[in-house]
Each structure stands twice: as structure tokens, then as C-alpha cells.
Length: 199
Ligand SMILES: [Zn+2]
Image (tube, rainbow, N blue to C red; front, side):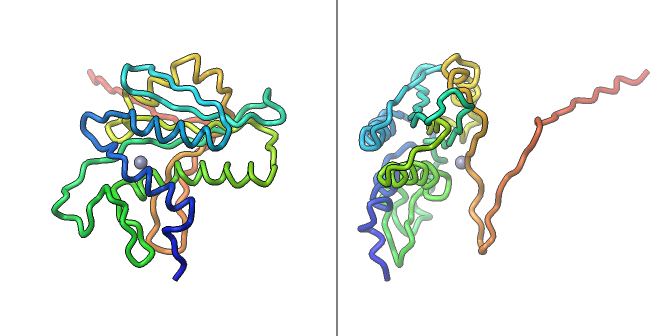
């Protein structure tokens, strides 16, 4: 079997999984330190926006050849839901590999996605590839508790507006078979409230 642990991308994911960004009362500093290190390695500038104090949003930016075009946003959340440690076969923040499987809170939802974005950029850049559009990698807090102090405030800021986003990717869901699940949406979400007061 391939020695997964020696794959740099896997090792990088495991480093992220070992950060206990678990609810409640998350201190995101360790995530920021980790992500800043990634950005330095990738040679990408970083901005950290706290629309709400201690609820940082970190954005790495890979400028495209035509930076005036609307950009692509690759978003992920840094937080994970709590654990019942006693119910786990392996410690949830150790990121142990057993038979090629990584056991950790956050490995599906969704630190793996954040690291896949990073590693994809790393590989593209290492091959000297340049993209036409600017790519932003955003890492947001508090998605698992509704994002009220995270993404939902960030999108109201000038920082967000200035990213000039044309299209965004975010998490999907794990699939138990060979089909991949994609949440699709087009035009705009249309939530309608109908009130019938009667008479
Ligand atoms: Zn998630």
C-alpha cells in the first residue's frame, strides 16, 4: 500500500486536523498561524478580516493575468463540531492513519477541502501555470454554528466586495459510493414568505 503519511499533501492535511478548532469557544489563532505558513509557502499575500472581533476570516489571493475580471472564490470553514471522545476508535485530533484511512474530526467536514485548494494551487504554481482570473482562498470561522459571526458578516464588508467574486466553491458532502454529490444553484435563491392573515 502507498505510504500515504509521506505524501506532503497528506502530512499537511494532518497538521491542520490536529488543530483543535472545535466548538465551543474556538480560538482561531492556531488556524491563522497554520494558514499564514501555507500562504508564505505558496507566495500568496494574505489578509485577515475581523468583521466580528476574534472571528477572523483569512483570505489568500493568487492574482490572475487579468485581475480586473471577476474572481473565483474557494471557500472553506475552519471550525468543526464537538466530539464525544469516548465514542472514537482513535483520538479525534490525532489524525492517525490506519489502513490508508485518516481518522479525525474535520477530515470530511471540511479541512480536507481547504487543504485540497491549497495543494492544487501549490501544484499549479510549481508547474509555472498562471490563471487568467484571480483566485481567492477564504477560510471562515463559525460555519457550524450558522456563520452569523463569520461569513454572514464578512459578505457585508468592503473587503469582501473588493474581492469582486464571480463564482464560488464551498463544501459538498461525502458520498458512500463512487458518485460525487454537488450542490447546484443558479440565478438567485428565492426564499418566499407568504403570510395569509385571513379575515
Ligand atoms: Zn462543513
